[in-house]
Image (tube, rainbow, N blue to C red; front, side):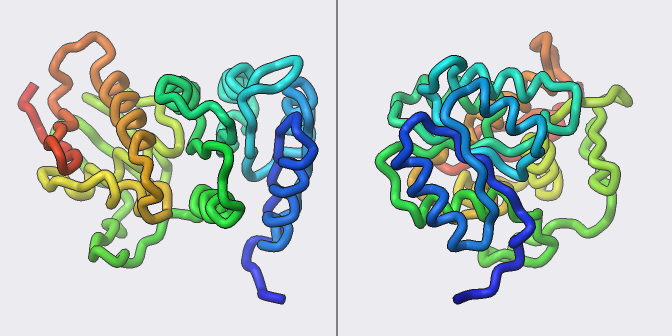
Length: 247
């Protein structure tokens, strides 16, 4: 028996297949998590709103309401449940399905069949708080509470971001990703570095998560296509960097 530092964390597993619910429950409970389950979209929303889980493992193809609908409704909820992390678990592996799920607000995407250890690794990573110590590649988060890059300002003590003084509405992962890029403005960060330091896990072979969140940030920085004064540049074959543009 191993000791765990997350025995108070609750995971909601939503899948219409009983064997998948059981498999996820066994491995997550071994890691010290409390697991609740639901077998359709409507009950998933009810359990999420009444029990406030720390994370939801959510299948896409569900009776009554799809995983897409559940995600959309949770993200639009006026309460704190709108920020609950979501790991989509599905047999649909096409890129368009992944992109739609991530754009709706899912934090990560795991395709069936999956190895249970990868599931637990993803769950741990999503729940892990951003570390302020140096990672294996030597990147260190600035421990100061705020930073500015041109007209962009971030305050991570308050978890607030603004552009030209106007507040930016960012989800948790969007804020952490922008924070990481701002910390190293002008420096190219690889997708693998961003995965490890924002999502908390090493490269599993899927960097689409980073690309989707970068596109979301770009739209929020410049919803009308004008120059906002900062830009997230793509360095082909390497990764991304945040730069001032003078706009």
